[in-house]
Length: 366
Image 1 (cartoon, rainbow, N blue to C red):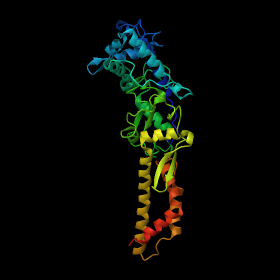
Image 2: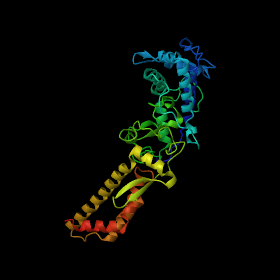
Image 3: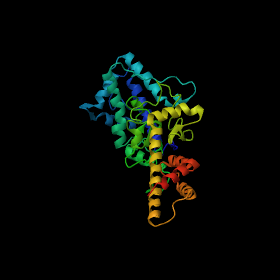
């Protein structure tokens, strides 16, 4: 989390959708709700807040997934025994209170599924995830400010554009974009990441506080993938993009003996930095970039040295090597990928022992 993460202009639409999902799930869990009640009329206010939301959700429930309508999945949840409904409702209320997990004395989050039957859980999971995987793609029933709308609601593509626009460090549309987590290139195919995995917590699949755009390297195994962002249900030693940002806390430390980079933080935040590093493999990834950039400059000086020899010119002096590093350092831009890694490298290269080592290497060039 090297860069600040901001809620974007259409985040209120996601927040409104999250509330709709919670309201729908809790209604299905009410003892009085039977399968027959899950109808277009049955979803109307006061079950959902507006007729627009009720009609949109009814349309979503008509979709077929794996040979089964989403409506039949909703009816399956409505048909659960009262005890199972109570357990699921308690889980829904706990998971919906995500911000409470970042307050002092927060209770441990549930880490096991609330329904004993895997089949019932997968039914509920598919129902909740469909709002993200199907509804969000075509358009939610909300304008960017969260106002219900029957047409032209916020889409997945619109969210991606809004996030990219809000997090551009260089406003030029042709400039390179930076991943907010690792500080590397965002790339041509960034991923919308669920910070808390939607596979385990599908109720958060369209939660404004749970979505961000990151590079594919960060999001895929062996990095984040499906790894948890809590320790057995406790968020105490974890950062969060919005609720406990790591920006300004995470720092890159140079490790001279290994000529490497380490993900670090102040003592109070070191456990969080350690967990972040373990999830994203930041130290090893940053070290690879650190050494690759070093090799680039090493090769550049070697080629210059050979050119000088071929032209009968004097070899590099220690002062010239130092000048090369200083000039390169002056060109580093905070809006470019890997700025933090390259800044650490520039300081490492200015150490007298390192520049003398370079000079010794150049003396061997023929």
